[in-house]
Image (cartoon, rainbow, N blue to C red; front, top):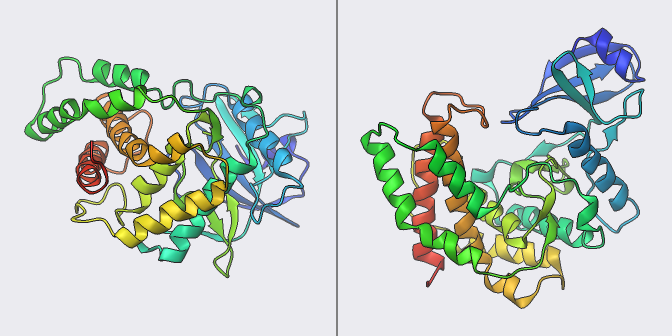
Length: 335
């Protein structure tokens, strides 16, 4: 979308600059600088999110719902276009605009214990603050996003009769050996909450003093279980490395685990039931298992969901997720 088209869609002052911004895996993001303001413009992935208007309306409605609540953070406000819509279209491409919020995101491998606590607390509080928003009012942007049956079905379809090399074959052996994790999660009866579904430190914006300013990337906010966010926090933070790094983790920092868990539960306050707290670590194991399935599924389908930087990146990510999962099971599960 060029500058002229942007101004046709949005009531903003003349544009001085449009530059690429951030490293998102799903959408392409740009910073738009005008004569008197700065905005975020996103070219949205219509393959992943089939109804971008309804998905972005979720973000708009959540922002309105949080207004007036006693939160120390916010969510980026959506800018409606001149038609009153959340999303604009330019031929076969879809765009949306949000207010720009200054600050920085945190790098998971270098998080301090206090930063890990604050990140987890913010996501716990996010669930707590949305408890009075009916789940029926939230559009399901990706149906069956954490459904174990659907993820397993998609995985099996993707790997049906492939010619496997040794790395792929070994990984599939591990997947089948740990299928019990999926089965245990299916057997648990838990309440449905509105959760973020992509809880990690790089979806938190902090100010110059390190205080949490905003929770970002709300496309996947949907009804789900508390352990979906707890699991993503642990999966993305406790191993102190990026998803595509080649070095495996040899151990888990128990202090970091404690700060993430305690921060999350502090944010949740008195919301969770005993069964939700008791099954958090099993749920985290499932999130790691599911993410391994997702990376492998996308790898065998030709990398259509996650943008990659090298040909076998999703396979590398899947292998590392599996190594992390084995370490997690050894450290925190007694099943």
